[in-house]
Image (tube, rainbow, N blue to C red; front, side, top):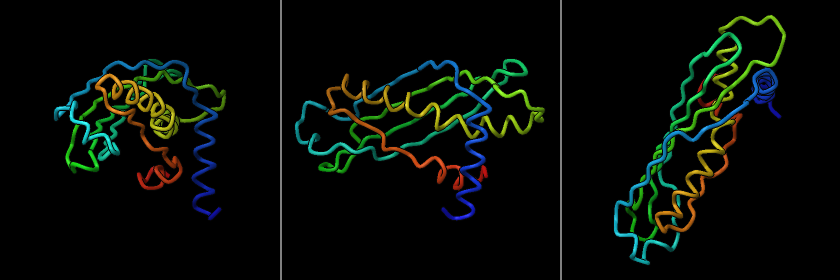
Length: 157
């Protein structure tokens, strides 16, 4: 493992070990068929075309914070080359500081920000699969994410 990736991994592990996800809620789901989904031509291959993630947080008290992850997903038919469905999913996670070490608040904020996406994305993934089935689409699944690469690309390490 290259040196910078090793550094990112150590930082991610530290944040993972010091802040734990204790509860999760899918608070909003929206699904919209953009075309007539009765047409079987759209079902050859239904990849996720565009995934946009936004995250934020708010502190509830000195040791508990809520993390928010909002995913906007456009699904493209590979055959028709057009957006056939759009999804919006909001997940809220309750995070608790679990370490007794004396760490400044800004350090815990940084650690919390490192955890929001990797901890809440599986709930977005699950909701998307369920919602796509309700629209009569073949189950749509999000690809797995390289957490360390995401942290590096977002400049958080």
